[in-house]
Image 1 (tube, rainbow, N blue to C red):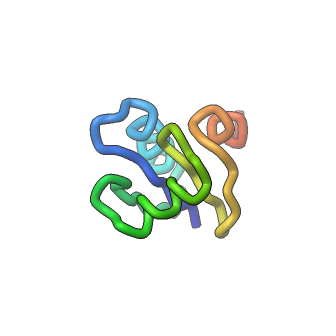
Image 2 (cartoon, rainbow, N blue to C red):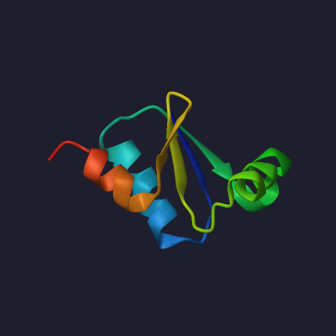
Length: 72
């Protein structure tokens, strides 16, 4: 399961979501600005950009790391 923390009007967040849909990957999208737990997560870990992506509960990084993770 992929958990994507992002912002609705971010093109990088949308590209990650689109890739998950295209590749039929199971994912959950959390609108960071609307979720209190997500806001705490960002402050605690000093994440400065979106999206932030977790796979099976493990932080993998952001957009670039996710695109590298995908099969070619």
